[in-house]
Length: 430
Figure 1 (tube, rainbow, N blue to C red):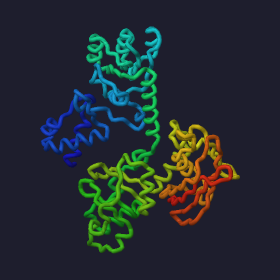
Figure 2: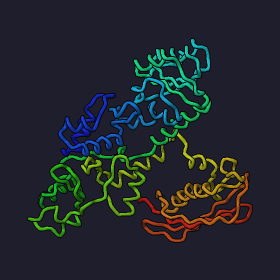
Figure 3: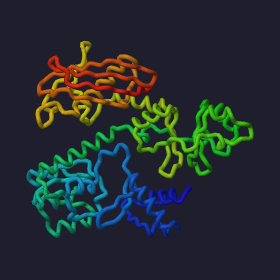
Figure 4: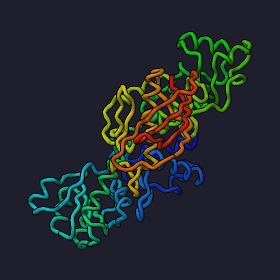
């Protein structure tokens, strides 16, 4: 285990809420302060620690994929441009819901519990009642609170925040932030599909040809990640490379060095792009220090993308909203220009033209080859503006189709006149 990995393991073993300093980590593990600083910075990127103003760096609970839509109170402070009046040590806690204190105190308390944020004005009785039930408090309108309430918040590590925005605006900002987190959760990443590696599914750089053949016979695989004694990824070996090997040669002499690899946070769509573009079947998954932790295959990536396309989505992206205005029938593709799709001049937004192409080109390619596609190049010419409440007809002409790529020309018309033309080059994910 490298020093970097030792520090990460040490940080992970600390209790949630414990303070961490570069000097203390360096002293406890007998490493340089530079090494400790880099490891703590990486720990922050993977969600093990967080830096809180006037508190310092503390160990936090790492969010799982199921918890990713939950925001911490510290993140709320940044979102609303607020300030912390008390309970700073509780900023690392997460909230699962928020409530607005716009009723009598005996009714407000019915909605309060731990992991709740109460949004309220300068009603000190409601603020204190919320804290006593384990809820954090956000005071709107730029108001402050009493020393008694701040003292209680500090003693129980319950954040009490203040914002200059009014209650309605604050609620909208927080709701949008939670909505964005929910959409982020739905984006598939490597962590969702990775297969952990075992010793029988990898080869070491000092192995010989006979060792490779034995592994291939036992597993039925022809591609293996090559690692050193510390499980650090050093190469990839396939059946193409071993053709040139003799019995006494080592795999390190013939492997492909510095192979393409991904990390747990890489999106599955990005992996699909790399696999098609580079013509590879297997991607090693590594840590930031290049230690091998798993592999994904082209089959894993395509299966995951197909399953995702069949799942109901919780949050709508901009493309989802535009897709609802697209009507695909046997007669063709029509788009209704509603106010949502227009710009400040009342004409169809340029970004909507691109989104329409993105959403409809997949339909055209599935008709032809029943394959998923990824747009590689898109050149669009805008000929005329499209007014609100107009209807657009979208027509595709297939110019060239190969095994992995296709070239298409798209024409958009409204009221018998061409309004836009585009040339598309797309990859086909087989």
